[in-house]
Length: 392
Image (cartoon, rainbow, N blue to C red; front, side):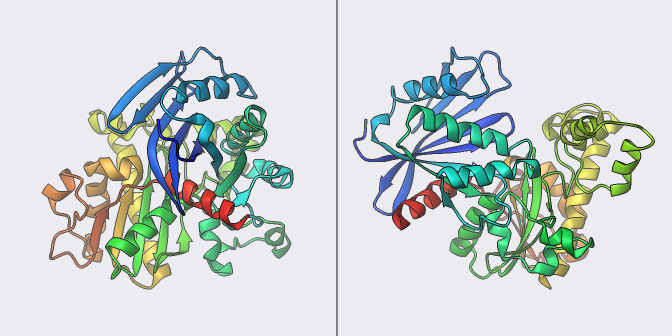
């Protein structure tokens, strides 16, 4: 096992956590392994990758509110493959940073309390991240911990873009557009600077179970589809995207649904699952022959294409579209469905390249380029954690 210093990253979703294992090499973090726990699975297991090898280790621990047993056992299993005693820091993805956190931060008591206070703005994700922060504190009280915020990347957006047409006092209280998936967009912006420096105005489509788009101008966020919450923007696996506020009033008034019932409907029963009534997974829907499945896919691609057109207006032009995340990187049918609706912008796909998930999937005659770029949120978390540690 390596004797060099290690850094761990925790990318907590609403029901899973991705764990990155990195070596600290000077000012850089290099990934040497990764793990994932799906808390929906019974029994729990740690799926671990170390170089070319993959392992699945069952967990005896049951999920508790504090996650102490799960974290303790996870560290014990990691110690079979890595020098866990050499871990010097842990970096966490935190979905919401509000107006305070516009960059990575050390996790002291004050920062943890401030992140906790933002829980109402991200009720699915914020508590999960804090559970891991606190569980690590319990296991390793002196371990340095940092937070990387999904909202921070979008702090470069103009105030006009971030405003809702509501009373100014509410805006000043923090009811405004924040944007999410910022760690993914930050990684893609870096890749584009390296691989496509000539592409100034780019729309990136981060398409997974959670999905959004971001308008980049020279790698800087200028607009995005998600706004105040992770419910906003394009339809997602189980979230609706844009929704007329009158629908909420109707559900609360005429339908007499409680706050909890409305919240559950919007976060867990809408989106692709709600439209199709079949599945939240685009892979299932693409293979299903029923018209409801087709309609869910068509609505998904229609809204994505429409948002790309809107962002072309925000940017004042468009050089390229980039597809990333699980659906964006691996599902040619979804990309083709979006591109078909963008022929008016001059986009044409190379069918063979698209099917192969190639880096460039547009034809040479296309007036704008289309690319597929794999994202790596854990690398951004690791890099930002090192930047915080160096600053301290």
